[in-house]
Image (tube, rainbow, N blue to C red; front, side, top):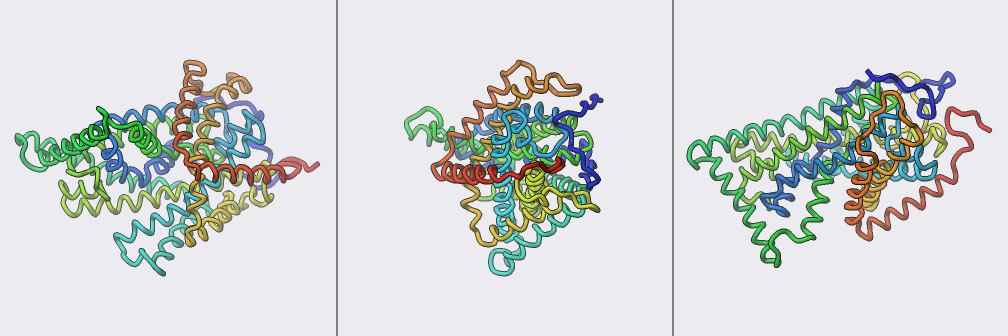
Length: 472
């Protein structure tokens, strides 16, 4: 077991008799949390988009995207091994580059979390509409948006344990249908091959070949021997986005039992699991669904071919639970950014308080929900959602750039994780972030610029002393 670091600039500040956050989350619960955040609704739609852009090469592309994202994950793992406070990328940027840069990273990340709660609430109502038609409009839609978010909020107010247990349960509920899909789909393909090309497997293989040849034909028609640069860029963004969410893992580090040891473990473990799962799902989908590239519900459609009607329902329910699970994580982690910012003097002091009984940042949790729900019901979150591209860029690039600086500032702290190769991995991760920058539309950039300007105004209004310090 790693030796705890001595008290220093990264230690939790003294509480002065006030209630402190409860450290109750174990290593494997953190793994469940990060899996719940990363494996979202995207995996249920990824196979069609990747097949349309890359055809048969999409399986290899999915695996290579996981390897590429590993570079950024490793930067987060090293940075997390230095800290036991909440805040994740905000904390890393603040310690490396100072208060202003750190605040802007934290501010942008929290705004993206608010937009995420709103958009996922709407997406859940839309997905539920396939199972319960009343959820598509009117009172049914409003109920499907409001009740789940209020339920997730209540769970995260009454205790970190209840929020984490719910997140882990939802992670299992969303991954089990995917495991059934890949195991049963693989068996169907093998049975078809063993039968000499007959049955579901052969039809599936023919469908995969059709997707691949169709993609190649489209590329040839465009005048190239392979996918166009535009298609490759779109595919890269699609694949990289499917792996996003890991950056929020350490947002609640103040409630993890041993965050400096367990967060790096959870980050590296999840990227291995997710990469294998995504590539396997892509292979099965290609091998079992003719016309995959144009399927609106690719996994449910493929499951119906080799599992029957119940397989389609299983994957439909899995997609719905996947959205709910990801939103559960957002309701849990988002307020921790707000809490960390408030404790450092940004915004009202009460946002940085801990509930005396539940030991959670209850006011921050309730505040985020109070902002996100009206956005979801009104639909006005769409403009705010444009921040997600810029916010992720700030989070990833800020952390990759912070790693070499933190090495110089903090040195070789006991138990800290250090990447081999010097600055090679952080530089490669920073270059990968430029892929996200290249995808930003003028609307994304404008939304980001406005948010940064508002953030600068908030930063200038900082209280004289952060929470936990004596006012001067």
